[in-house]
Image 1: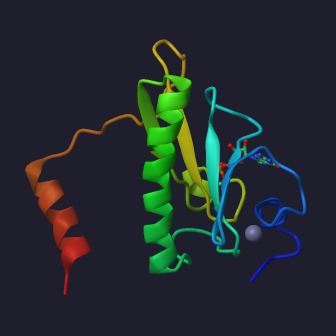
Image 2: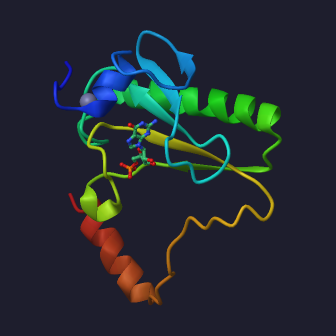
Length: 137
Ligand code: 5GP
Ligand code: ZN
């Protein structure tokens, strides 16, 4: 289940070398080549799934368990004091490599990075309408 044109398939399966922090039968965790902070890493499944929509539920669960283990281990070793988990789906959402991955971003005091959005004003009625749209039968 690999895509011959996908760079993350090649990295995850060891065809292209990477700085690997962890590997098992399902995942490889590598250092990002354009890190936001020291230790910025990516969890890659070895099989090719474009995004969260395509990822099997079981693999999604395993990815989150691995993220927790990596966050604890990396924070201890690197001395980071905060941690962002980031996961982009689709080009509109900032995805640039279309092989599912989770960003592990250790955070440090005054690291100069911001990961965020501009909060919008919203009324209770608007919140209610959105909830109805999402939760409709
Ligand atoms: P996205 O924007 O798709 O969520 O994140 C893609 C990430 O992959 C970026 O942070 C980028 O720096 C990283 N990246 C892209 N190509 C490579 C590569 O060949 N090797 C590694 N280690 N990271 C890569
Ligand atoms: Zn792939």
